[in-house]
Image (tube, rainbow, N blue to C red; front, side):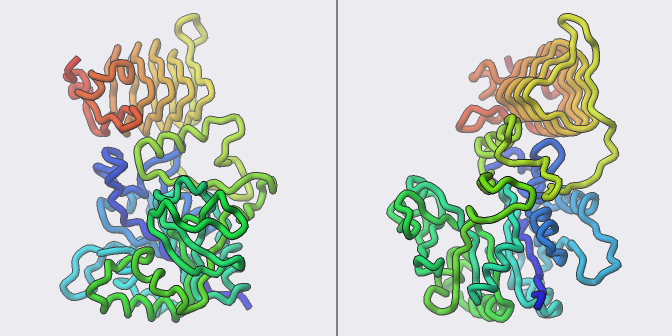
Length: 417
């Protein structure tokens, strides 16, 4: 019997640690990889897995996310079970304003579950870069006759203090949770790794509805799945961990390890984007059997102009997206998003340049993220003088320089040298 599956994507995070990339946009709407947004990865995983009934719960700074969902993820509406619908915080509960936690976000939208009558509800976050065959996790959930299944990724034990760790028995049954505990129990049969929760869940509908209502009445709860609901279920129901390392992606060789990255900080985001430049990248965007979908913008092809010494458009070990023009500039080990212009004599290295940026003649950019719609006047230097960078821009702990979007050429020209 085919199970009816309803999906909720939690896309309401502020993404404060990604500031200033989240100054004007929600974290799921942050661009990634040339033409994508972070939210595209979870939505692609769902669609590729044959799950087509999806609500996207949004909250903070939602305009750019709403626009992207409209441009890239609107179904025709011909079939009632095929939809991707953004759901803003609706203040349906008396006296409430914003969602207080992940469970509270779901509680505010109980009517969407009750009117759909699904067998299972999948609750996935929109904050990570990964590929996942969710259908395989659903099958695991059914085989185990589980009421709750949590996606778990094996990580080295030394990182246990950075994650919520799941303690399991040998058969995958969950027997405990350990929040950021360096001494958390390791995986049975593997003394070097622990199971970190990925924040992705499958619930039987009855169990989910019951727990959300119970949690809403608990004044001492923070109304969060990971902190409150799931720990309270240990020993109370059939709850299993799904090993993400065993997740098969159609079209990938069997030896390829599943890809998952937490891009919660500027440095982590930068490193994940740089992963894409590899000759054989860990995140394969070229698997036609498992495409990463996004909005289909009518961009012209990228163009490289001039063939003269000292004035030759070149890109090496880089990603160059549609509509970009390299007019005599050099791009090395970088990711250019849509509609970027690189002018004669400019050198961009180890950097990420967002949509519609214009890099002027003889600019030198290194280890930087240039947000969308920035114009850099000729001879601008970024990433070479730490003191100047600290005065004029946001600099991450790892030394990545972030130039905020929306700054005009006059703004850039007036920075203190």
